[in-house]
Image (cartoon, rainbow, N blue to C red; front, side, top):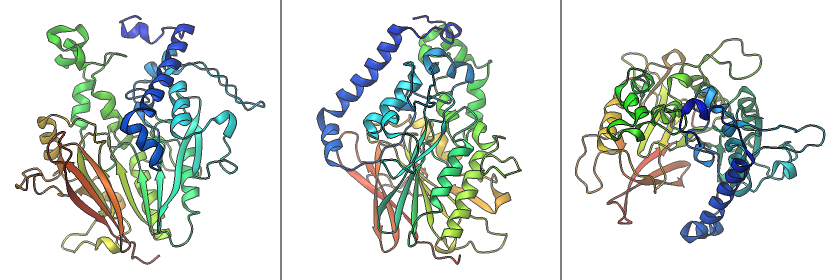
Length: 427
């Protein structure tokens, strides 16, 4: 395979590559899903799964369009017409999403179809065909217990560098949300990337800059910095992760039209999505809480109603705009270096006026006041240790307990709690 980034973008999708891609995904799923503790968990614990980049390839959808349109990434023959069958060449995007649906959702579009009104899985919400994947998005809205539903929003199948979800997906998701049965008080919205989180725009600019010496040295392989750039187009390795963020420039400031077809004003996708959930929460009297991960650390962000000067803020119980974003990453994810955690923690104290126009304030919850050994912490907003989150339902509240590893590999955790109160505002 060629090492030159420009040649990779036009490298043909050969029969050999197609076979290799299929063997990789199929073997990877078989090896991991039938061995060890993960296999036992899969066979004994009920679970819901949603697509993200590592189900395809790291950063898929957040690379520049010329790379995403490369034959090995995207090429396929789309023949979903009268015969209702897919004739798909084996590119990374098409086969990665196919095997995600098959192994993690037990779905095959050739068998189950794409009409979610008649679908075998009554929880599925089928959106629009992806720009780089020959399948429509598959989101899921499922019952989770007393007064509780979970929305797992597919933020990957339709993703582009300047889009997370398409207007079609948003339309269909909100249509289904409005049909939730009476008595539902809590909606958990699971998204792969945090939506209320410190901004790293300055870092995006630095990594995108052609004058960045580290990127130049990485491309040349000098000083052992070849790992600083990715293997696909030799951009900075961290750039696709930053472009994934809802708070990235491309998503926070996107001028793409989102929402219902009669929406005449262009709005920013991330802000528009938050606003629509606020309107839904108020009208349906349902508390909305986000759960996300991917950043390899633990944190809690939140939205709330902006209080005018010299006035007390609304109590969370009566504030329909009060939405927590619980950020927790897989227990196997190694946290970032201490320097990165310190940087993100310092940015967590910055006040954001991004949504003041919509009477909405956002910030971070200083949940980590102590270390896992009980000592006080100077960085209460972000915890750079492996973690996972347990959720309990107590007296109409959701209690999120982030379980943080006391010592790496020791198997013991310390819990840090935050509560999502019940909705007690007037419709």
